[in-house]
Amino acid sequence: MLSAQPPSTAPLQEDVLLDEHVDLIDGPEVETRELVIPSDLHGERLDRALAVLLPEFSRSFSQQLLSEGCVSCVVPTPRVMTKASAKVRMGERYQLILKPTPQSQAFKPEDIPLDVIYEDEDLRVLFKPAGLVVHPAPGNWSGTLLNGLLALDPQAVMLPRAGIVHRLDKDTSGLMIVARTRRAMDALVAMIAEREVHREYLAVAYRKWSGTPVRDIVAAIGRDYRNRLRMAVVDLERLPGKEAHTTFECLSSQEEACLVQCTLHTGRTHQIRVHMAHFGHPLVGDSLYAGPMTLGIDRQALHAFRLSFDHPITGESLKFEAPLPDDMVNLLAGLGLKRPE
Image: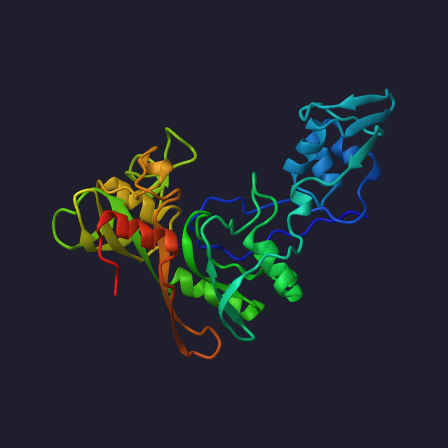
């Protein structure tokens, strides 16, 4: 029997756009089911009827079955059903073929090397390299941090998102916290929401820094209505979005670029990248917000180098730092920028 994992309930602070809900299917490779339309669903849309009769799956999953030709009417007239809006009639019998999808195979352990900086019975702090996706999503259904966590700790399968409480973009390197118990996960999610987890980044941005060394940016961020893959600074009176606050401090500057320390006060999607681009300093290598420009690095030059918080269970004050990865060290040297002390 195929079953669906219930969607997680804990909210997630993120630096990358990802689906919160994924239909998971496990068990045999293919299952065939037969359904009979009851009187109370007579006249309903087929996708809604399927969602009611398959309560463990979402309506979007029912629509996916239809689009893939996996739903057939058997009685009274045999035919393959593909239109979600088709009206059903009482007594009709349908046959469904439920087969694995990329989503169904996503939440599986994979032997992925993980660099664990700190570990106790409630949480881990680890270093995520650039190029590693945090959570399965379209285009990356395997080979993610989550898959590696499931292999590292089999008990992680009992936690929403294997204990991941915040994210980094695929091409951002640096420190992350991962919960190992539900009590720690709930506490960490609440702490992040209350801004009690402090995250600092180092970024290399285009152009010489101008103005005062420290700059505080408070500007709402929402979806860019011109490009749905991007975020943008928005006027909340005209467009949806959320308030976002970042503090920037220039550490070194030359004609082509500058090294900036970034402190997050909120955790909006792409927050540092959007705020930096908004005031004229898009990140080096950031093809989404800076275009095809490059100065010798093939990803956005952004590194989560410092993480500090009170332990959610013991209350112990914890602080971690991760040195710059080699590609950013080489970038600084090539640009003549001073490395941070």
